[in-house]
Length: 238
Figure 1 (cartoon, helix red, strand yellow):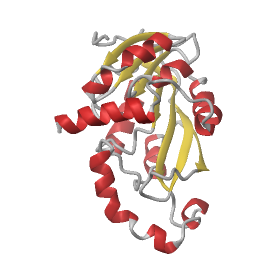
Figure 2 (figure 1 turned 60 degrees about the vertical axis):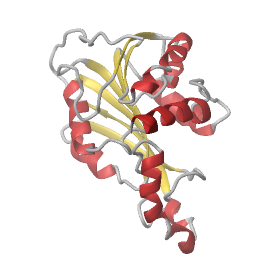
Figure 3 (figure 1 turned 180 degrees about the vertical axis):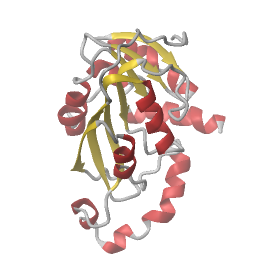
């Protein structure tokens, strides 16, 4: 397990994340991820922050706390912090299903490509709602299983789509528990009852993904009405 986590951290930072530097020649980064993160406000919690590459995409006015379960990826965050145009208040090791923060600690919670890998999506989404302040927002960009009759799934020949189920377990072991075959919409809908929710899907098919998939992005705004105190963040710094 330790060797796998160390290998994944190196591979993610070196081969996938461009050493923590956003690639604006990539349409998903330029046209989707960057505009989404520019909507962040106030005290921000990013769950599954990887090597901190998103820090360069936040507005200068926010204060960002990063949460990452892989301790080896935490070691790569110094580069992202150096390129950040915003204030970075801390980097914390933890799981999305058990956030080490008090209720109502953040104005914005962000996940990008995270909910495919948490063990319990419902628990993680419940925790996100718990730590959001009234009127706070949850911004998400997730790669998930495309619905069976969607344009994304239909774009694959049947013979090409059939082998993906057995490959999912191999991908799970290689890509730090990532499950591209997971659905998402039902869980975000359940977690956002009583809140203002906006979600849309944009089709995409990365050649390395072992399933027909799409990207879901959107926001959920929590219930309004209560005053709040500043976030109290565990002091785990880099």
